[in-house]
Length: 290
Image (cartoon, rainbow, N blue to C red):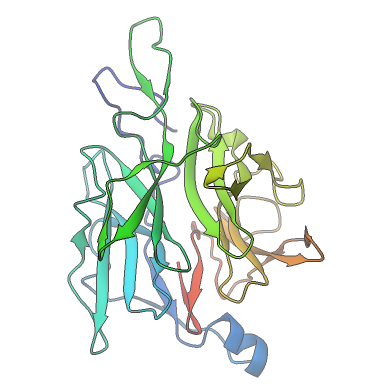
């Protein structure tokens, strides 16, 4: 179960318990678009060290050229996760390094790089995040908020909570930004009750994120939806759900964006989904990563 609070100053509330299992990153050598166009099957293989390790790696986000990767890493036995990055040089991924300018002493997770590569969104329970009132025992209950950082002279600026009406005393996590539509997507759930997780959207207007609204019931089925992110071709979105019709655990689904609305979600099928947890899918240059 999710940890609601602890007796210390800060509780550790990463994607823990039933959520944080082994979210490793995988690569499909043909990819979804190639499958659609040629009928080729998707062959999965674990990305090699140093990207995958004994730690939990999850939530990959790529630069447009596919040569820079941001992701989460949570070492075994640690309460907290950090943001890491790695670059592809001569066909080999370099040793991932923590993004020191963005990480805090607490949990920083689920990075999402904007299409123009000028903004990095992520979730954190660092000091300054909105908190639930202390319980009767005086224990502090810290929720996650969404933060962003801007690229300035080649470096990331000090992260701040994103402006507007997105953050609350409950959990806001797994952000993704559709730059074409100027819409931020994220998952929200009441503190301590992940079964009520809902995917939300908020439009960016004049630098301020407007009051968020829940996506329609075809997406928010009440089965722990999370990780909503745009496809690289602009035709729709991937997300994870534990809804009926999957293969077990979280499965990856796709909903199209057509005529100003979301189409009926379809499962990515057994070539992507398994009886384990499959989540945080992204596509870059005909390769699938999750």
